Amino acid sequence: MDLKQERVVVAGAGGFIGGHLPRALVNAGVPVVAAVDIKPLNEWYQTSEGPDLKNLSLDLKDLNNCRTALEDATVCFDLAADMGGMGFIEHNKALCMLSVLTGTHLLMAAKEAKLNRFFFSSSACVYNGDLQKTPDVVALKEADAYPALPEDGYGWEKLFTERMCRHFYEDYGLETRVARYHNVYGPLGTWTGGREKAPAAICRKVLEAKESGRHEIEIWGDGLQTRSFMYIDDCVKGTQMITLSDIREPLNLGSDELVTINQLVDIAEDIAGIKLKRNYKLDAPKGVNGRNSDNTLILEKLGWEPSIRLREGLRKTYEWIESEMHSEAPVGAH
Picture (cartoon, rainbow, N blue to C red):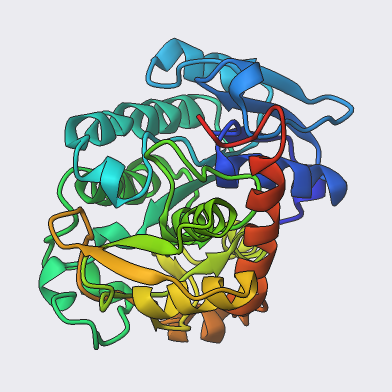
């Protein structure tokens, strides 16, 4: 399969990953015919331009809107979801679950349109919570999603839509591909307002502490919880590789560079050239105690592994947020 011979639609294009993907595809000469998001165009984090590309503001929870979005398509990338960091996910479970309407209706429209390929962006939040109770967690391999005990709300929606993708292939022959994203970060994403994830939130807090002269930082949880973080460029490349592959089962797409939240703060402090007093908010949403990506399968099958180390990616993210804080019209601040 060659994406340059297809007609591509990106759903969720007003968001973070969904904004980077069409730009990368257009730059690679891929015919992107539509980029779609529920938000008004002036609220998209970035927009792309191409010879036949239409930027559409549509609510894809509605089946007819999905049909409209896919009417000229042969490939769909579904990155549309109501989501954010743990502060958002833990307090908006119903809203996160409603994204199941988007996935379901896009799959229905894709079947009707006889698309050649349908990509779904799942999440590491599908993994069984009992395997993530300690910071020294064993890296999660794809089989660890079952028996099912995903993150309440958001994780269940992702796991359900994974199953829908599987059955749409089994019952209707729709070629579906699924990536389980592990904590994607980078420039041109949310960095304040409540939906931001840990790397962006910590960069912002360190910058605020540095600029205010009040050298303190609030950390959610005890700082000992562990995570891995994947830079956006690696995510976009891996997404395309999975879409083009012949692997129909979900694949991890993430870094296996495990760090504690305290170590993430260490790196951000080092970039900023300061040391901060740490105040731990133990009653704040912090998610599971430990989560890391086992990349054995994707390395074996596709030869993919992250190319950008956390320190390098966090520096780029820090510098971008710093520029946005001083901008009159910041991106990702709503």
